[in-house]
Length: 352
Length: 258
Image 1 (tube, each protein chain N blue to C red):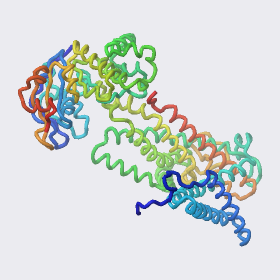
Image 2 (tube, rainbow over the protein chains, first blue to last red; image 1 turned 60 degrees about the vertical axis):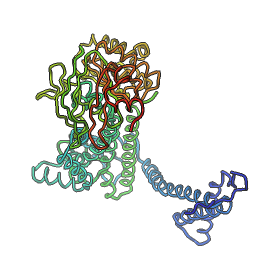
Image 3 (tube, chains in turn purple, red; image 1 turned 60 degrees about the horizontal axis):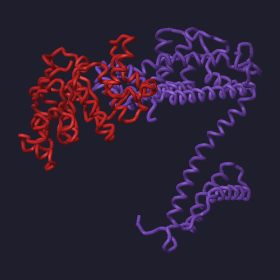
Image 4 (tube, rainbow over the protein chains, first blue to last red; image 1 turned 120 degrees about the horizontal axis):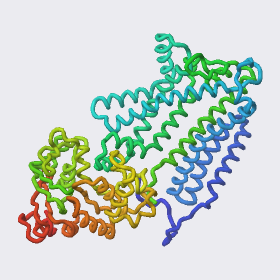
Protein backbone atom coordinates (compact mmCIF):
# COMPACT_ATOMS: atom_id res chain seq x y z
CA UNK A 1 0.00 0.00 0.00
CA UNK A 2 1.34 3.38 -0.88
CA UNK A 3 0.86 6.38 1.27
CA UNK A 4 -0.17 8.53 -1.66
CA UNK A 5 -3.27 10.57 -1.03
CA UNK A 6 -6.32 8.62 -2.11
CA UNK A 7 -8.81 11.41 -2.27
CA UNK A 8 -8.15 14.77 -3.86
CA UNK A 9 -9.67 17.36 -1.56
CA UNK A 10 -10.01 20.90 -2.78
CA UNK A 11 -6.77 22.77 -2.26
CA UNK A 12 -6.43 24.32 1.18
CA UNK A 13 -9.41 22.43 2.57
CA UNK A 14 -9.71 19.47 4.93
CA UNK A 15 -13.19 18.85 3.60
CA UNK A 16 -13.63 16.41 0.73
CA UNK A 17 -16.79 15.68 -1.20
CA UNK A 18 -19.21 13.60 0.89
CA UNK A 19 -22.22 11.60 -0.12
CA UNK A 20 -25.35 12.59 1.79
CA UNK A 21 -26.25 10.71 4.94
CA UNK A 22 -29.25 9.00 3.35
CA UNK A 23 -27.08 7.51 0.62
CA UNK A 24 -26.71 3.98 2.10
CA UNK A 25 -30.48 3.73 2.55
CA UNK A 26 -31.11 4.93 -0.95
CA UNK A 27 -28.52 2.50 -2.29
CA UNK A 28 -30.15 -0.34 -0.37
CA UNK A 29 -33.64 0.54 -1.58
CA UNK A 30 -32.37 0.98 -5.12
CA UNK A 31 -30.58 -2.37 -5.19
CA UNK A 32 -33.60 -4.19 -3.75
CA UNK A 33 -35.78 -2.65 -6.44
CA UNK A 34 -33.21 -3.53 -9.09
CA UNK A 35 -32.88 -7.06 -7.74
CA UNK A 36 -36.66 -7.53 -7.89
CA UNK A 37 -36.82 -6.08 -11.38
CA UNK A 38 -33.99 -8.27 -12.68
CA UNK A 39 -35.45 -11.46 -11.25
CA UNK A 40 -38.94 -10.61 -12.59
CA UNK A 41 -37.49 -9.93 -16.03
CA UNK A 42 -35.44 -13.13 -16.01
CA UNK A 43 -38.33 -15.17 -14.65
CA UNK A 44 -36.56 -16.20 -11.43
CA UNK A 45 -38.91 -17.39 -8.72
CA UNK A 46 -36.75 -17.90 -5.63
CA UNK A 47 -36.58 -15.20 -2.93
CA UNK A 48 -32.95 -16.07 -2.42
CA UNK A 49 -32.01 -15.16 -5.98
CA UNK A 50 -33.32 -11.59 -5.96
CA UNK A 51 -31.89 -11.06 -2.49
CA UNK A 52 -28.43 -12.16 -3.61
CA UNK A 53 -28.64 -9.94 -6.68
CA UNK A 54 -29.72 -7.03 -4.50
CA UNK A 55 -26.89 -7.67 -2.02
CA UNK A 56 -24.28 -7.79 -4.79
CA UNK A 57 -25.70 -4.63 -6.39
CA UNK A 58 -25.70 -2.87 -3.01
CA UNK A 59 -22.04 -3.65 -2.27
CA UNK A 60 -20.76 -2.95 -5.80
CA UNK A 61 -23.05 0.02 -6.36
CA UNK A 62 -22.14 1.87 -3.22
CA UNK A 63 -18.46 1.23 -3.96
CA UNK A 64 -18.77 2.57 -7.49
CA UNK A 65 -20.75 5.68 -6.56
CA UNK A 66 -18.58 6.44 -3.57
CA UNK A 67 -15.35 5.93 -5.53
CA UNK A 68 -16.63 8.39 -8.13
CA UNK A 69 -17.77 11.05 -5.66
CA UNK A 70 -15.74 10.65 -2.51
CA UNK A 71 -12.51 9.00 -3.60
CA UNK A 72 -11.10 5.47 -3.16
CA UNK A 73 -10.44 5.57 0.59
CA UNK A 74 -14.02 6.48 1.44
CA UNK A 75 -15.19 3.91 -1.10
CA UNK A 76 -13.26 1.14 0.63
CA UNK A 77 -14.69 2.28 3.94
CA UNK A 78 -18.22 2.10 2.51
CA UNK A 79 -17.54 -1.34 1.05
CA UNK A 80 -16.46 -2.66 4.43
CA UNK A 81 -19.55 -1.15 6.03
CA UNK A 82 -21.90 -2.59 3.45
CA UNK A 83 -20.27 -6.03 3.68
CA UNK A 84 -20.83 -5.99 7.44
CA UNK A 85 -24.48 -5.08 6.88
CA UNK A 86 -24.96 -7.85 4.32
CA UNK A 87 -23.33 -10.37 6.65
CA UNK A 88 -25.56 -9.17 9.47
CA UNK A 89 -28.68 -9.66 7.36
CA UNK A 90 -27.47 -13.09 6.24
CA UNK A 91 -27.21 -14.07 9.89
CA UNK A 92 -30.44 -12.49 11.06
CA UNK A 93 -32.78 -13.49 8.25
CA UNK A 94 -32.73 -17.25 8.97
CA UNK A 95 -33.09 -16.57 12.69
CA UNK A 96 -36.01 -14.21 12.24
CA UNK A 97 -37.63 -16.57 9.77
CA UNK A 98 -37.25 -19.48 12.20
CA UNK A 99 -38.74 -17.50 15.05
CA UNK A 100 -41.54 -16.21 12.84
CA UNK A 101 -42.39 -19.64 11.45
CA UNK A 102 -42.43 -21.22 14.91
CA UNK A 103 -44.65 -18.52 16.34
CA UNK A 104 -47.00 -18.60 13.35
CA UNK A 105 -47.39 -22.39 13.40
CA UNK A 106 -47.12 -22.73 17.15
CA UNK A 107 -49.89 -20.40 18.29
CA UNK A 108 -52.56 -22.49 16.55
CA UNK A 109 -53.07 -24.89 19.42
CA UNK A 110 -51.01 -23.20 22.15
CA UNK A 111 -53.35 -22.24 24.97
CA UNK A 112 -53.98 -22.91 28.65
CA UNK A 113 -55.58 -26.25 27.86
CA UNK A 114 -52.58 -27.33 25.80
CA UNK A 115 -50.17 -26.43 28.60
CA UNK A 116 -52.16 -28.14 31.34
CA UNK A 117 -53.19 -31.46 29.77
CA UNK A 118 -51.36 -34.58 28.72
CA UNK A 119 -51.85 -36.85 25.72
CA UNK A 120 -53.24 -39.56 27.99
CA UNK A 121 -56.71 -39.94 26.46
CA UNK A 122 -56.03 -38.53 23.01
CA UNK A 123 -54.92 -40.63 20.06
CA UNK A 124 -51.86 -39.12 18.38
CA UNK A 125 -53.72 -38.65 15.13
CA UNK A 126 -56.59 -36.67 16.68
CA UNK A 127 -56.64 -33.02 17.66
CA UNK A 128 -56.65 -32.05 21.35
CA UNK A 129 -54.31 -33.13 24.07
CA UNK A 130 -51.37 -31.16 25.42
CA UNK A 131 -47.82 -31.09 26.71
CA UNK A 132 -48.24 -30.95 30.47
CA UNK A 133 -46.51 -34.31 30.89
CA UNK A 134 -43.64 -33.23 28.64
CA UNK A 135 -43.13 -29.90 30.46
CA UNK A 136 -43.17 -31.72 33.78
CA UNK A 137 -40.67 -34.28 32.50
CA UNK A 138 -38.33 -31.65 31.04
CA UNK A 139 -38.38 -29.59 34.23
CA UNK A 140 -37.64 -32.62 36.40
CA UNK A 141 -34.94 -34.06 34.18
CA UNK A 142 -33.20 -30.73 33.65
CA UNK A 143 -33.59 -29.88 37.34
CA UNK A 144 -32.00 -33.15 38.42
CA UNK A 145 -29.22 -32.80 35.86
CA UNK A 146 -28.53 -29.28 37.16
CA UNK A 147 -28.50 -30.46 40.77
CA UNK A 148 -25.91 -33.09 39.84
CA UNK A 149 -23.73 -31.01 37.52
CA UNK A 150 -23.50 -27.67 39.30
CA UNK A 151 -21.71 -28.86 42.46
CA UNK A 152 -19.39 -31.12 40.47
CA UNK A 153 -18.74 -28.47 37.83
CA UNK A 154 -18.22 -25.53 40.18
CA UNK A 155 -15.99 -27.52 42.53
CA UNK A 156 -13.92 -28.78 39.60
CA UNK A 157 -13.46 -25.22 38.38
CA UNK A 158 -12.51 -24.06 41.89
CA UNK A 159 -9.93 -26.84 42.01
CA UNK A 160 -8.53 -25.94 38.62
CA UNK A 161 -8.27 -22.20 39.29
CA UNK A 162 -7.45 -22.03 43.00
CA UNK A 163 -5.61 -25.22 43.83
CA UNK A 164 -4.72 -27.19 40.71
CA UNK A 165 -1.02 -27.43 39.92
CA UNK A 166 0.92 -29.91 37.90
CA UNK A 167 -0.11 -33.15 36.31
CA UNK A 168 -3.50 -33.75 37.90
CA UNK A 169 -4.76 -30.29 36.96
CA UNK A 170 -3.56 -30.74 33.39
CA UNK A 171 -5.25 -34.12 33.20
CA UNK A 172 -8.53 -32.69 34.52
CA UNK A 173 -8.38 -29.82 32.03
CA UNK A 174 -7.75 -32.30 29.23
CA UNK A 175 -10.67 -34.52 30.15
CA UNK A 176 -12.99 -31.55 30.53
CA UNK A 177 -12.00 -30.59 26.99
CA UNK A 178 -12.70 -34.12 25.81
CA UNK A 179 -16.06 -34.13 27.58
CA UNK A 180 -17.03 -30.88 25.87
CA UNK A 181 -16.77 -32.70 22.57
CA UNK A 182 -18.83 -35.76 23.49
CA UNK A 183 -21.79 -36.07 21.11
CA UNK A 184 -25.02 -36.21 23.07
CA UNK A 185 -25.96 -39.60 21.60
CA UNK A 186 -22.72 -41.07 22.99
CA UNK A 187 -23.50 -39.76 26.46
CA UNK A 188 -26.93 -41.37 26.09
CA UNK A 189 -25.49 -44.69 24.95
CA UNK A 190 -23.00 -44.68 27.83
CA UNK A 191 -25.74 -44.33 30.44
CA UNK A 192 -27.89 -46.81 28.49
CA UNK A 193 -25.22 -49.49 28.63
CA UNK A 194 -24.16 -48.75 32.21
CA UNK A 195 -27.44 -48.02 33.93
CA UNK A 196 -30.01 -49.96 31.96
CA UNK A 197 -28.15 -52.84 30.31
CA UNK A 198 -25.51 -53.64 32.96
CA UNK A 199 -27.16 -52.50 36.18
CA UNK A 200 -30.58 -53.52 34.95
CA UNK A 201 -32.42 -50.36 35.94
CA UNK A 202 -35.51 -49.31 34.01
CA UNK A 203 -36.07 -46.32 31.73
CA UNK A 204 -36.65 -43.22 33.80
CA UNK A 205 -36.28 -39.47 33.86
CA UNK A 206 -33.30 -39.88 36.18
CA UNK A 207 -31.44 -42.00 33.64
CA UNK A 208 -31.94 -39.16 31.17
CA UNK A 209 -30.73 -36.55 33.61
CA UNK A 210 -27.54 -38.52 34.22
CA UNK A 211 -26.76 -38.35 30.51
CA UNK A 212 -27.71 -34.66 30.45
CA UNK A 213 -25.38 -33.92 33.35
CA UNK A 214 -22.52 -35.56 31.44
CA UNK A 215 -23.17 -32.96 28.76
CA UNK A 216 -23.66 -30.14 31.25
CA UNK A 217 -20.64 -30.62 33.55
CA UNK A 218 -17.95 -29.54 31.06
CA UNK A 219 -19.93 -26.43 30.12
CA UNK A 220 -20.31 -25.47 33.78
CA UNK A 221 -16.61 -26.14 34.47
CA UNK A 222 -15.52 -24.03 31.54
CA UNK A 223 -17.72 -21.03 32.25
CA UNK A 224 -17.05 -21.10 36.00
CA UNK A 225 -13.31 -21.38 35.35
CA UNK A 226 -13.39 -18.26 33.18
CA UNK A 227 -15.37 -16.36 35.81
CA UNK A 228 -13.01 -17.35 38.63
CA UNK A 229 -10.03 -16.29 36.56
CA UNK A 230 -11.60 -12.83 36.24
CA UNK A 231 -11.48 -12.31 40.02
CA UNK A 232 -8.46 -10.05 40.61
CA UNK A 233 -5.61 -11.72 42.45
CA UNK A 234 -5.41 -8.66 44.69
CA UNK A 235 -8.67 -9.65 46.35
CA UNK A 236 -7.33 -13.09 47.20
CA UNK A 237 -4.14 -11.52 48.56
CA UNK A 238 -6.08 -8.96 50.56
CA UNK A 239 -8.05 -11.73 52.18
CA UNK A 240 -5.03 -13.97 52.80
CA UNK A 241 -3.13 -11.03 54.29
CA UNK A 242 -5.92 -10.63 56.84
CA UNK A 243 -5.12 -14.10 58.08
CA UNK A 244 -8.09 -15.73 56.42
CA UNK A 245 -7.48 -19.39 55.47
CA UNK A 246 -7.48 -20.16 51.78
CA UNK A 247 -10.70 -22.18 51.76
CA UNK A 248 -12.58 -19.35 53.45
CA UNK A 249 -11.05 -16.89 51.02
CA UNK A 250 -12.41 -18.94 48.14
CA UNK A 251 -15.80 -19.38 49.80
CA UNK A 252 -16.34 -15.86 51.10
CA UNK A 253 -14.40 -13.63 48.71
CA UNK A 254 -13.75 -15.35 45.38
CA UNK A 255 -17.08 -17.10 44.85
CA UNK A 256 -19.29 -14.16 45.95
CA UNK A 257 -17.34 -11.86 43.64
CA UNK A 258 -17.94 -14.12 40.66
CA UNK A 259 -21.37 -15.51 41.56
CA UNK A 260 -23.15 -13.46 38.90
CA UNK A 261 -21.01 -14.84 36.11
CA UNK A 262 -21.20 -18.38 37.46
CA UNK A 263 -25.00 -18.19 37.57
CA UNK A 264 -25.09 -16.94 34.00
CA UNK A 265 -22.88 -19.83 32.92
CA UNK A 266 -25.09 -22.35 34.69
CA UNK A 267 -28.24 -20.89 33.13
CA UNK A 268 -26.72 -21.05 29.67
CA UNK A 269 -25.68 -24.65 30.30
CA UNK A 270 -29.24 -25.42 31.39
CA UNK A 271 -30.56 -23.80 28.23
CA UNK A 272 -28.19 -25.93 26.20
CA UNK A 273 -29.26 -29.28 27.66
CA UNK A 274 -32.96 -28.46 27.71
CA UNK A 275 -33.11 -28.95 23.96
CA UNK A 276 -31.17 -32.23 23.92
CA UNK A 277 -33.18 -34.98 22.26
CA UNK A 278 -30.93 -37.97 21.70
CA UNK A 279 -30.14 -39.06 25.28
CA UNK A 280 -33.71 -38.43 26.36
CA UNK A 281 -34.98 -40.55 23.49
CA UNK A 282 -32.72 -43.43 24.54
CA UNK A 283 -33.17 -43.27 28.28
CA UNK A 284 -36.45 -41.62 29.21
CA UNK A 285 -38.35 -43.56 26.55
CA UNK A 286 -41.41 -41.32 26.39
CA UNK A 287 -45.00 -41.71 27.44
CA UNK A 288 -48.32 -40.07 26.76
CA UNK A 289 -49.26 -40.10 30.41
CA UNK A 290 -48.31 -37.86 33.29
CA UNK A 291 -45.50 -39.40 35.32
CA UNK A 292 -44.35 -37.07 38.07
CA UNK A 293 -41.77 -39.50 39.44
CA UNK A 294 -38.49 -39.08 37.60
CA UNK A 295 -36.97 -42.13 39.29
CA UNK A 296 -39.39 -44.72 38.00
CA UNK A 297 -40.98 -45.53 34.66
CA UNK A 298 -40.73 -43.62 31.42
CA UNK A 299 -41.41 -39.91 31.35
CA UNK A 300 -41.92 -37.48 28.51
CA UNK A 301 -39.90 -34.39 27.65
CA UNK A 302 -40.41 -31.47 25.29
CA UNK A 303 -37.79 -32.27 22.63
CA UNK A 304 -38.86 -35.90 22.56
CA UNK A 305 -42.53 -34.88 22.38
CA UNK A 306 -41.77 -32.74 19.35
CA UNK A 307 -39.95 -35.62 17.70
CA UNK A 308 -42.68 -38.19 18.44
CA UNK A 309 -45.49 -35.88 17.27
CA UNK A 310 -43.58 -35.11 14.10
CA UNK A 311 -43.03 -38.79 13.31
CA UNK A 312 -46.75 -39.40 13.86
CA UNK A 313 -47.41 -37.29 10.80
CA UNK A 314 -51.05 -36.27 11.19
CA UNK A 315 -52.04 -32.58 10.86
CA UNK A 316 -53.09 -32.41 14.50
CA UNK A 317 -49.76 -33.90 15.56
CA UNK A 318 -47.83 -31.37 13.42
CA UNK A 319 -49.70 -28.54 15.11
CA UNK A 320 -48.88 -29.93 18.52
CA UNK A 321 -45.21 -30.35 17.58
CA UNK A 322 -45.02 -26.69 16.52
CA UNK A 323 -46.71 -25.52 19.70
CA UNK A 324 -44.32 -27.62 21.80
CA UNK A 325 -41.37 -26.18 19.87
CA UNK A 326 -42.62 -22.68 20.58
CA UNK A 327 -42.94 -23.54 24.27
CA UNK A 328 -39.39 -24.92 24.30
CA UNK A 329 -37.95 -21.81 22.63
CA UNK A 330 -39.86 -19.56 25.00
CA UNK A 331 -38.62 -21.57 27.98
CA UNK A 332 -34.99 -21.30 26.88
CA UNK A 333 -35.39 -17.61 26.13
CA UNK A 334 -36.81 -16.96 29.59
CA UNK A 335 -33.83 -18.80 31.09
CA UNK A 336 -31.45 -16.64 29.08
CA UNK A 337 -33.19 -13.45 30.16
CA UNK A 338 -33.09 -14.63 33.78
CA UNK A 339 -29.37 -15.31 33.43
CA UNK A 340 -28.75 -11.80 32.11
CA UNK A 341 -30.87 -10.32 34.88
CA UNK A 342 -28.97 -12.20 37.56
CA UNK A 343 -25.64 -11.27 36.04
CA UNK A 344 -26.58 -7.60 36.09
CA UNK A 345 -28.06 -7.75 39.56
CA UNK A 346 -25.12 -9.60 41.10
CA UNK A 347 -22.33 -7.79 39.28
CA UNK A 348 -19.92 -6.28 41.82
CA UNK A 349 -20.52 -2.57 42.10
CA UNK A 350 -17.59 -0.65 40.77
CA UNK A 351 -16.93 3.02 40.57
CA UNK A 352 -19.56 5.41 41.80
CA UNK B 1 1.17 -4.95 70.87
CA UNK B 2 4.04 -4.02 68.60
CA UNK B 3 6.74 -6.62 68.10
CA UNK B 4 10.32 -6.54 66.94
CA UNK B 5 11.33 -8.29 63.73
CA UNK B 6 14.77 -9.84 63.40
CA UNK B 7 15.75 -11.07 59.96
CA UNK B 8 18.91 -13.06 59.41
CA UNK B 9 20.38 -14.59 56.28
CA UNK B 10 17.18 -14.44 54.27
CA UNK B 11 17.08 -15.57 50.63
CA UNK B 12 13.87 -15.51 48.59
CA UNK B 13 13.36 -17.40 45.35
CA UNK B 14 10.90 -17.50 42.49
CA UNK B 15 11.34 -21.11 41.37
CA UNK B 16 15.10 -21.28 40.86
CA UNK B 17 15.58 -17.51 40.45
CA UNK B 18 17.15 -15.93 43.51
CA UNK B 19 15.32 -12.62 43.93
CA UNK B 20 16.88 -11.33 47.14
CA UNK B 21 20.04 -12.54 48.78
CA UNK B 22 21.29 -12.75 52.32
CA UNK B 23 19.29 -10.03 54.02
CA UNK B 24 19.74 -9.39 57.71
CA UNK B 25 18.16 -6.51 59.60
CA UNK B 26 16.33 -5.58 62.73
CA UNK B 27 13.03 -3.74 62.57
CA UNK B 28 12.26 -1.89 65.76
CA UNK B 29 8.83 -1.97 67.36
CA UNK B 30 6.70 1.22 67.51
CA UNK B 31 8.63 2.80 64.70
CA UNK B 32 8.34 3.27 60.97
CA UNK B 33 10.94 1.56 58.81
CA UNK B 34 11.03 2.59 55.16
CA UNK B 35 12.45 0.51 52.31
CA UNK B 36 13.77 2.48 49.36
CA UNK B 37 15.59 1.42 46.22
CA UNK B 38 15.17 1.12 42.46
CA UNK B 39 12.38 -0.94 40.89
CA UNK B 40 12.98 -4.66 40.79
CA UNK B 41 15.50 -4.69 43.63
CA UNK B 42 13.34 -6.91 45.78
CA UNK B 43 11.84 -4.45 48.33
CA UNK B 44 8.32 -5.76 47.82
CA UNK B 45 9.50 -9.36 47.72
CA UNK B 46 11.31 -8.87 51.01
CA UNK B 47 8.25 -7.18 52.50
CA UNK B 48 6.12 -10.13 51.48
CA UNK B 49 8.46 -12.59 53.14
CA UNK B 50 7.72 -10.85 56.45
CA UNK B 51 4.16 -12.22 56.58
CA UNK B 52 4.65 -15.28 54.42
CA UNK B 53 2.74 -13.79 51.49
CA UNK B 54 5.75 -14.50 49.27
CA UNK B 55 4.90 -18.17 49.15
CA UNK B 56 1.40 -17.38 47.84
CA UNK B 57 3.05 -16.57 44.50
CA UNK B 58 3.51 -19.82 42.56
CA UNK B 59 7.13 -20.92 42.84
CA UNK B 60 7.89 -18.57 45.73
CA UNK B 61 10.05 -19.96 48.54
CA UNK B 62 12.24 -18.61 51.28
CA UNK B 63 15.41 -19.61 53.14
CA UNK B 64 16.61 -18.04 56.34
CA UNK B 65 15.12 -16.79 59.57
CA UNK B 66 12.53 -14.14 60.36
CA UNK B 67 12.07 -13.80 64.11
CA UNK B 68 8.93 -12.05 65.38
CA UNK B 69 10.05 -11.34 68.97
CA UNK B 70 11.05 -14.87 69.86
CA UNK B 71 9.21 -16.90 67.24
CA UNK B 72 10.63 -17.92 63.86
CA UNK B 73 8.00 -17.27 61.18
CA UNK B 74 9.56 -19.97 59.02
CA UNK B 75 10.00 -22.49 61.83
CA UNK B 76 8.55 -25.93 61.30
CA UNK B 77 4.88 -26.22 62.18
CA UNK B 78 4.23 -22.48 61.92
CA UNK B 79 0.85 -21.81 60.30
CA UNK B 80 1.12 -19.08 57.66
CA UNK B 81 -2.49 -18.12 58.38
CA UNK B 82 -1.60 -17.44 62.01
CA UNK B 83 1.44 -15.41 60.90
CA UNK B 84 -0.72 -13.20 58.71
CA UNK B 85 -3.03 -12.46 61.62
CA UNK B 86 -0.01 -11.10 63.48
CA UNK B 87 1.50 -9.28 60.52
CA UNK B 88 -1.06 -7.35 58.47
CA UNK B 89 -0.55 -5.91 55.04
CA UNK B 90 -1.73 -2.96 52.93
CA UNK B 91 -1.22 -3.20 49.19
CA UNK B 92 -0.15 -0.80 46.49
CA UNK B 93 -3.55 -0.52 44.87
CA UNK B 94 -6.58 -0.13 47.13
CA UNK B 95 -8.39 -3.46 47.01
CA UNK B 96 -11.61 -3.36 49.03
CA UNK B 97 -13.82 -6.41 48.56
CA UNK B 98 -16.23 -5.36 45.80
CA UNK B 99 -19.17 -7.40 47.08
CA UNK B 100 -19.03 -5.89 50.56
CA UNK B 101 -20.14 -2.62 52.13
CA UNK B 102 -17.76 -0.27 53.94
CA UNK B 103 -18.78 -1.85 57.24
CA UNK B 104 -18.40 -5.42 55.97
CA UNK B 105 -15.00 -4.62 54.51
CA UNK B 106 -13.68 -3.49 57.87
CA UNK B 107 -15.34 -6.41 59.62
CA UNK B 108 -14.15 -8.88 56.99
CA UNK B 109 -11.00 -9.99 58.77
CA UNK B 110 -12.87 -10.76 61.97
CA UNK B 111 -15.90 -12.25 60.30
CA UNK B 112 -13.97 -14.48 57.93
CA UNK B 113 -11.87 -15.71 60.84
CA UNK B 114 -15.02 -16.29 62.88
CA UNK B 115 -13.39 -14.81 65.98
CA UNK B 116 -15.65 -12.04 67.20
CA UNK B 117 -18.67 -11.28 69.30
CA UNK B 118 -21.52 -9.66 67.43
CA UNK B 119 -21.89 -6.94 70.04
CA UNK B 120 -18.21 -6.00 69.76
CA UNK B 121 -18.24 -5.75 65.98
CA UNK B 122 -19.83 -2.28 65.78
CA UNK B 123 -17.25 -0.94 68.24
CA UNK B 124 -14.33 -2.53 66.44
CA UNK B 125 -15.49 -1.20 63.07
CA UNK B 126 -15.89 2.31 64.45
CA UNK B 127 -12.56 2.16 66.26
CA UNK B 128 -10.74 0.92 63.17
CA UNK B 129 -12.33 3.51 60.91
CA UNK B 130 -11.47 6.25 63.42
CA UNK B 131 -7.97 4.78 63.59
CA UNK B 132 -7.73 5.12 59.82
CA UNK B 133 -9.07 8.72 59.91
CA UNK B 134 -12.00 7.65 57.78
CA UNK B 135 -14.86 7.56 60.27
CA UNK B 136 -16.14 11.08 59.70
CA UNK B 137 -16.20 10.62 55.95
CA UNK B 138 -18.04 7.30 55.88
CA UNK B 139 -20.14 7.16 59.04
CA UNK B 140 -23.29 7.98 57.05
CA UNK B 141 -22.58 5.45 54.33
CA UNK B 142 -21.34 2.44 56.26
CA UNK B 143 -23.66 0.14 54.37
CA UNK B 144 -22.89 1.45 50.90
CA UNK B 145 -20.42 -0.51 48.74
CA UNK B 146 -16.79 -0.02 49.71
CA UNK B 147 -15.84 0.24 46.05
CA UNK B 148 -17.88 3.46 45.83
CA UNK B 149 -15.37 5.46 47.87
CA UNK B 150 -12.65 7.57 46.29
CA UNK B 151 -9.20 6.05 45.78
CA UNK B 152 -7.73 7.68 48.87
CA UNK B 153 -10.70 6.70 50.98
CA UNK B 154 -10.48 3.15 49.66
CA UNK B 155 -6.84 2.94 50.69
CA UNK B 156 -7.66 4.17 54.18
CA UNK B 157 -10.51 1.65 54.21
CA UNK B 158 -7.95 -1.06 53.46
CA UNK B 159 -5.80 0.23 56.32
CA UNK B 160 -8.84 0.14 58.61
CA UNK B 161 -9.51 -3.41 57.46
CA UNK B 162 -5.92 -4.38 58.22
CA UNK B 163 -5.85 -2.82 61.71
CA UNK B 164 -9.28 -4.21 62.64
CA UNK B 165 -7.75 -7.63 63.26
CA UNK B 166 -5.25 -6.01 65.69
CA UNK B 167 -1.99 -7.21 64.13
CA UNK B 168 1.38 -6.52 65.75
CA UNK B 169 3.06 -5.41 62.59
CA UNK B 170 1.67 -3.53 59.60
CA UNK B 171 3.38 -3.93 56.22
CA UNK B 172 2.63 -1.32 53.56
CA UNK B 173 3.63 -1.91 49.97
CA UNK B 174 3.77 1.53 48.31
CA UNK B 175 0.48 2.50 49.93
CA UNK B 176 0.39 5.98 48.38
CA UNK B 177 1.61 5.36 44.86
CA UNK B 178 -1.93 5.27 43.46
CA UNK B 179 -3.11 8.29 45.44
CA UNK B 180 -3.20 12.04 44.86
CA UNK B 181 -1.13 14.35 47.10
CA UNK B 182 -4.00 15.17 49.47
CA UNK B 183 -4.88 11.52 50.03
CA UNK B 184 -1.17 10.79 50.38
CA UNK B 185 -0.93 13.37 53.12
CA UNK B 186 -3.90 11.79 54.91
CA UNK B 187 -2.27 8.36 54.75
CA UNK B 188 1.09 9.73 55.90
CA UNK B 189 -0.51 11.45 58.89
CA UNK B 190 -2.20 8.18 59.64
CA UNK B 191 1.10 6.30 59.54
CA UNK B 192 2.48 8.75 62.10
CA UNK B 193 -0.41 7.96 64.43
CA UNK B 194 -0.34 4.22 63.85
CA UNK B 195 3.29 3.87 64.84
CA UNK B 196 2.27 4.50 68.43
CA UNK B 197 0.60 1.09 68.37
CA UNK B 198 2.17 -0.95 65.60
CA UNK B 199 5.50 -1.80 64.08
CA UNK B 200 5.25 -0.32 60.60
CA UNK B 201 7.24 -1.23 57.52
CA UNK B 202 6.63 0.79 54.38
CA UNK B 203 7.96 0.33 50.87
CA UNK B 204 8.09 3.60 48.93
CA UNK B 205 9.50 5.03 45.75
CA UNK B 206 9.07 8.50 47.08
CA UNK B 207 12.24 9.59 48.87
CA UNK B 208 10.55 12.63 50.44
CA UNK B 209 7.92 10.33 51.81
CA UNK B 210 10.54 8.06 53.34
CA UNK B 211 12.21 11.09 54.88
CA UNK B 212 8.89 12.45 56.18
CA UNK B 213 7.36 9.37 57.75
CA UNK B 214 10.12 6.94 58.70
CA UNK B 215 12.41 6.61 61.68
CA UNK B 216 14.75 4.19 59.99
CA UNK B 217 15.42 3.68 56.31
CA UNK B 218 16.80 0.67 54.48
CA UNK B 219 18.30 1.04 51.02
CA UNK B 220 18.10 -1.93 48.66
CA UNK B 221 19.92 -2.29 45.39
CA UNK B 222 20.79 -4.75 42.65
CA UNK B 223 24.44 -5.65 42.21
CA UNK B 224 23.76 -5.81 38.47
CA UNK B 225 20.87 -6.60 36.14
CA UNK B 226 19.85 -10.24 36.62
CA UNK B 227 21.63 -10.45 39.98
CA UNK B 228 19.64 -10.80 43.18
CA UNK B 229 18.65 -7.71 45.16
CA UNK B 230 20.42 -7.08 48.46
CA UNK B 231 20.34 -4.74 51.39
CA UNK B 232 22.92 -1.99 51.00
CA UNK B 233 22.46 -0.39 54.39
CA UNK B 234 19.92 0.37 57.07
CA UNK B 235 20.26 3.28 59.44
CA UNK B 236 18.38 6.13 61.08
CA UNK B 237 16.51 8.03 58.41
CA UNK B 238 18.27 11.27 59.26
CA UNK B 239 21.66 9.67 58.77
CA UNK B 240 20.67 7.94 55.53
CA UNK B 241 19.48 11.21 54.04
CA UNK B 242 22.29 13.41 55.36
CA UNK B 243 25.38 11.32 55.70
CA UNK B 244 25.00 7.71 54.49
CA UNK B 245 27.91 5.41 55.05
CA UNK B 246 27.77 3.85 51.57
CA UNK B 247 28.42 5.87 48.44
CA UNK B 248 25.70 4.03 46.43
CA UNK B 249 23.05 5.24 48.87
CA UNK B 250 24.13 8.82 48.52
CA UNK B 251 24.15 8.52 44.73
CA UNK B 252 20.65 7.07 44.70
CA UNK B 253 19.22 9.62 47.09
CA UNK B 254 20.76 12.57 45.33
CA UNK B 255 19.68 11.26 41.92
CA UNK B 256 23.17 10.50 40.60
CA UNK B 257 22.14 6.96 39.90
CA UNK B 258 23.79 4.73 37.33
